[in-house]
Image (cartoon, rainbow, N blue to C red; front, side, top):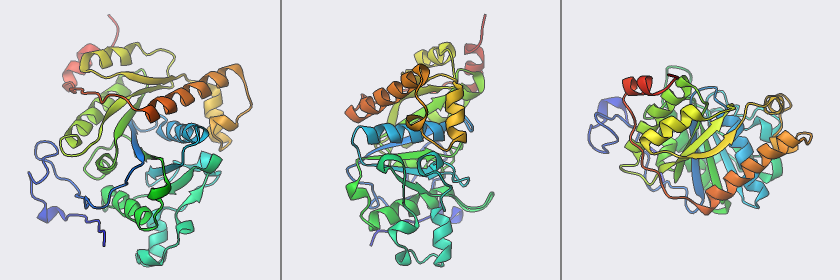
Length: 303
């Protein structure tokens, strides 16, 4: 039987999987893999719009005819509400109802249909300051695999909590083919992106995950992002401006593909469709070397 183990801190051996110097990681059973689906993990600074990006990207993949599964990896469990029009119970919530006897769960207890057939799961997480998010991700993938849901999936999107790149919330990187980073054209977002690049590079030493590109969000220009990308070897995968229709779509609990048509919205929809098509076709992995904090401070800004 497939198992997922959370390794107690007291028994973790440094150097077993050298995911960075002095790494302390949650180790997931390598037999619990996702299979043939293309897997993307979406990272970025907290509040940058990862859930908006993930949900609309899921919608775009579905409009290409792909069978899509979106997994929200945040205790707030708000990743998928524009797809489902409601706040879903988390995997942790439903496991608690059966005293963590996972065999008693039905698929419909934790997987919910969303816009255009997108399957939606909210992994959730432990209460603040307790437990490990990596364990939650592992349990979620295990449940999906045991119920054979991953066999009928073309695309899996992990929408990951904020800019937390500890061992636990780096766990989706152990399943992903490509990691995408959402950022705005400002210092704080790019600074957080640099830390995420470091985490992805560490995971890439032992797993198949590679950097897939940068998504500029809520930004009229991309000059600071471009400056950073050119310096370390990243590329812009897509650019979404700061439009009021995007804010309103969240308030209406809708994807951008359900909003009232307008010329500016059509451009955003086309950009999501272009991004989905490009990701499906695949791209060369990017090799990027993160910068030192002081070097970013000196690089960004105006003369």
